Image (tube, rainbow, N blue to C red; front, top):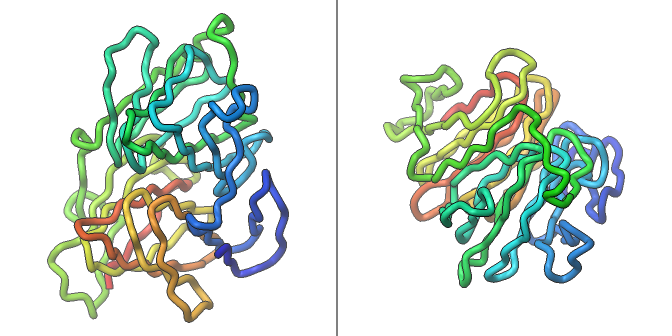
Length: 279
């Protein structure tokens, strides 16, 4: 179900996207299209969560790879960032040894850099992809260029986690008795006011908290779930599986409870800082 505190809606790339203070896209409602139409059925499938990957606007999409998929060497016209949701994904120079990145791993692919992308056989590879500008195009490696950025691959096992003793983005309400708190990892960007950044929020199983933005859009994708979700102004709970999305702006608050067997991972894209208050 796609729900929101409605102001207006538009249709973008086959997905209804609400232009509101709050929006939710459940994994089961995502509509998919070829990420690279030129390859037809051989292309990974893309389901837009927000924006439109065919236009020059910030966008987020869920990417599903065919079993054993491997691309030819190619480049993109824009830089993208990605987080593995399921399976194992390889993204590197054409001659690099395979480095299979599992769920929770992160990579940055600079515009103009020749690379290949592959998904391990039998792994049902899925990833979240984010672009800050578009459109997202696949171009031949003969058109490679250096945009000054460098690629980054970070396996989930190498991510450094910070807790409330390290950062001031976390809080705890008077009602909370938990001693097992949230953690976060900085992936890219700057935490300064009005500067874009991406982080991963890790929630212990069974924990509940409220996520607050800072006036600009905060967009969150469930990387490892499920998580129960309740948004401002609604009484019902939604169960958000991995690959689901929720966004908030203008004072909206999202209450999240981790229902995973181990822990929940939520990718958060915003400007400046946000707050997570454990309750």
